Length: 301
Ligand SMILES: [Fe+2]
Picture (cartoon, rainbow, N blue to C red):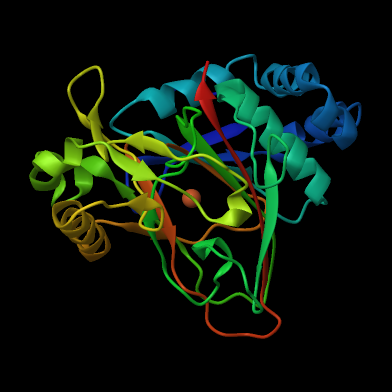
């Protein structure tokens, strides 16, 4: 992996599938200065300004960061990285991280409209209290392994998740699984039902008023399996589809090859959404639990 001055690039301590990128203070100082020219309203209302902020991030990285991030995400062997400040004590607020995440996302591609919030990104909180209609905010339930964008028309090649805040959180680790590490990949991706077109809907909070049809498994240009799956949204129409989805769900959760990792506040994780699945472990009950995340999903350029 090539070196960019001010950026430390290593493998995740548990797996060589994930890169860990740490940004040194001198780069963060430059970013703080150049991000000051942008305000969030402009980023939300003027789409071109999001590419401008991405360019300013690339420029503090010898104009080589975009290439590095794209190489990682397109490489089937890895396809995932985390990126965070090396020194967490530096004063960086949530608006810095919204700008930073925006810049990263636009070095990779173009974000999809997030119908849950009506913006190109979504900020949302996970708390003790919840009466929502999906697993996203159910703190004490396991959020099973899944990919994003299963119920929308847009292509979802990648997803970015940034942790903006966390208080009184025990548990809630991120679980990740690379399709090529999954013990049951061959068996399930070759099942005839894996290639049947299923119907995918979504609950009210997602603000999507249509349903889509697609198979759970498809193949990439090299013939390797790709997955588009989440447990809550497919609508099986017969016993064989229902049984296939149950087996798929059981085999994913049973996998011994998941990477379970804790993301510090201020860090972002970006993954190729075609061959990485992600989920969340349950939190330990705490009335003052608070986590705030930002997500952006989109297509490659
Ligand atoms: Fe997700």
